[in-house]
Image (cartoon, rainbow, N blue to C red; front, side, top):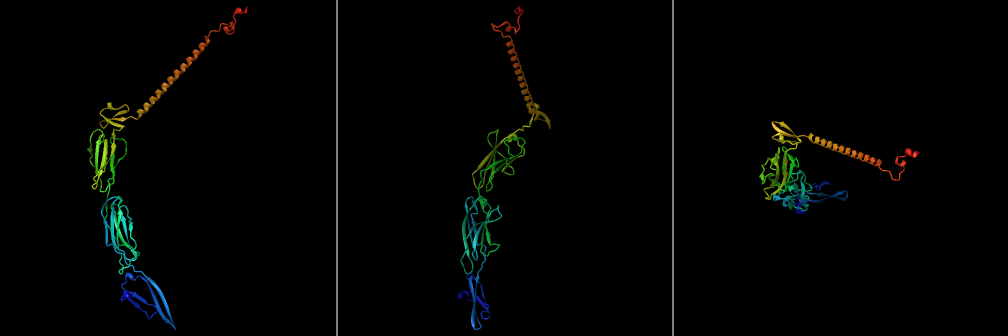
Length: 363
């Protein structure tokens, strides 16, 4: 013990006062422990003693990691990466933490924490060497990882090192096609946006195939500014057909596709013809901008319904009159039959003449 403190300690006032100071020069971690101060002095004819103890803790700063690696830097989803970090965590009870920070979150999360160190070295250095693995999801695309070195006395800013962002390859998923606005049947002149949606990294490559309803074979559709969309400001009859969206990306050669049917018909309320002879019974011929236009007459169905109701009422009235006349004729026939009925052969003259007697009967 004497050799450990030799030439590194100095006592001040050890024999001249009731207090003494010991100075330890160039402290090392092994100086950490409990120190006892013992004083013996004379008081009158007696010798007295006093003693007290004190705990000394040596704090050594944690330093920035000496080595930090994350590999591979490009990875498929559901695979794992290896994270390696070496750092001097200092004293006391140093440890290493591995953090992850995604593009969608501003708050890093701890994904690994090493055990606390308890070793004592003369120069207070305590290196921790950590290697761990982490399973990757597509949500980790663009994430960075951080290795921090700290101990019980470490304060912000915490010494740390960051990795570069990783790339996670995934998809493309099976695409879905949306029609905006959605209708089962579209009219000529309607607007329509057909969009193909998928998730993919690298970014997806879109290819559109159009097959008209009235033709065989496929026709490749021209791209719009956004290749995932096909925008129609005003639909035409020839836009009716099957739209197929095919997707792939540069990392995966396989192609996935989805399709949607679009039916475009003339408007019910208004159609253009070369002449009024082409207008239907429910339409009114009008001239507009030097064109003959057949406009649907909404009053025509109402008139037809009224006519039908009137016809039904007339037929019902005729049937009721005939039925009443038939009933009256049947009643009259029954009365005549009763008046013409013959009397029985044994009837008396009174019975035959309704109760009246002839002059002969009075003689």
